[in-house]
Image (cartoon, rainbow, N blue to C red; front, side):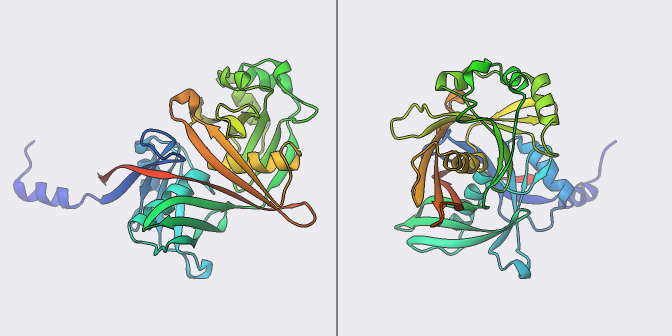
Length: 322
């Protein structure tokens, strides 16, 4: 069947167009860190369309920026989608999104630190934009006060899920535990970087581990205090269950915040009013990443805030038409 010119023009005009920017987060070099797609003006998109676009991008997360609600007093509302679902918060999407908003002039920044507010499902959270000479150097997301959940006691199953040995765990000092600073992760410390790098996820056992966690928790973060870089604190890998498969994340801001809180809570790092942790990730994927974590303590040695930050680079931009 042949369409006439008029109907073809009408069909073309009916398509939606939405610009996006692709960035790499937690790196100063392109092709490192964790890739992110940001739709800086998502007005007019339905939730279904956002989910389809996130699936089309096929990244760990894609963000959509909308006007904030008046009651939130935020600078922007950010909705965060994996290819499968919307999530309440994530670190690298927050950092990458506010880098884009600053670069696009959608948020005014000055040299030094500009504090912006993000409305997300997890709440209204501050974001620090560090600039110098008109250039954004670093973005820091202030996460929620940590919540410490149950320890995961079936070490045999967890070892099977990660294809490691039970002797690779240090259960007395650092048992696996559920931690959330906005998005819950099962933090799984191992004895060495070698053990972390040896992980090959077993999808069947991993799915069983997820089945024993609270609803919608699908993420496991393996780490060791045995980094590659002398300036780093930890060497980590992040895994999540998606559509029955176990996928790896090259740099995970939400999990890094949980990890920092865990290390301070367990007294596995030097305790100070401001404990600084440098977490490296992505080495096994050829996307080395540096994630800066700061855990601030009160006078009573309780955690009062967790900050996660890093550098961002733009890698490409385009237009989605559908």
